[in-house]
Image (cartoon, rainbow, N blue to C red; front, side, top):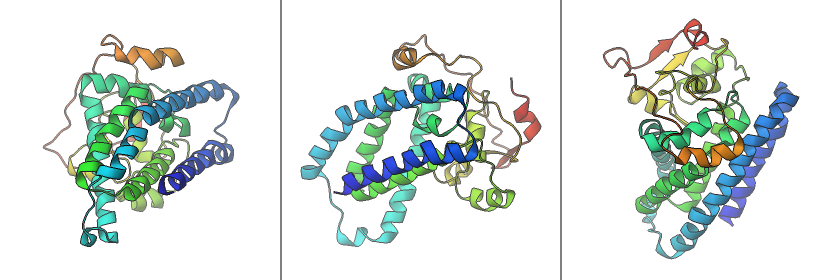
Amino acid sequence: MVFSNTIFIVWLFVLVDLIAVPLATGQLRRKDWHRITNNLGMMIVSVAALAIVIQTPLFAWSRENLWTRPLWMQGLIFVALDLLFLDFCNYGFHWLSHHVPFLWRLHAVHHLDREVDFSTALRTHWLAKILGNAYIGAIVLFSGVSLSTFAAVKVVSLAFSLYTHQSKIRMPLWFEETFGKVFVTPCFHSVHHTPSLPFTNTNYGFIFTIWDKLFRTSLIRKPRAPVRFGLDHHADPNFFTLLIAPLSPTFLSKPEQVKLNRKGPRLMSVDDAALGKIR
């Protein structure tokens, strides 16, 4: 029942973001439909592969073998701690996806999108989806996080991902300066999708910005300025190429690593002009 309700809530978020938000903000243009359907096709393949390889066997096995925490570790405080813990784990896998060559080729499918909107959040290579969920699933099983808490975190993470990829939504400055201090916002995440380093290798957070600030991978920009997206060193291939080509070492070489200034302040600033001039 928990997972049935979770699936319903997840798809409710998706449908609202697919229809209501784009229509309200004027994002849906005729020329966008090919790219959007391409992205949704990637999502369908990824979800199907995930269900077959990971979710169905995991749920069947976990019913008999999942470690259950004692009662004193099942209160709301531990649910909040689990939310922080799993968000940190997601941050860690995202970081790995940018620094391990094989994972980067898979994750680059997400970054190759030349526009960033709701459909970009759903655009994931099928093998990246399997590996990411195997990683987080193993953590859940061995840490004792309840499946209901895990499901709730997945819903919250999806909601934030759909929201933070709405690059055309301009939030008020006061909102960015208050809410954005703790939580990831579209402005914060848009830096991560710019085409050049060191910008691409920053702002890995899903829900909270604390991990980027703590590990000095945070770059901020002032809202309002236009930002280019995609990866300049590689064009966005067609749907079938995206499914198979990332498995080959020749598909995408690992971008040159540019170290952030670790002697400077933890929170580095990027002015709008610099981001706008990325080529």
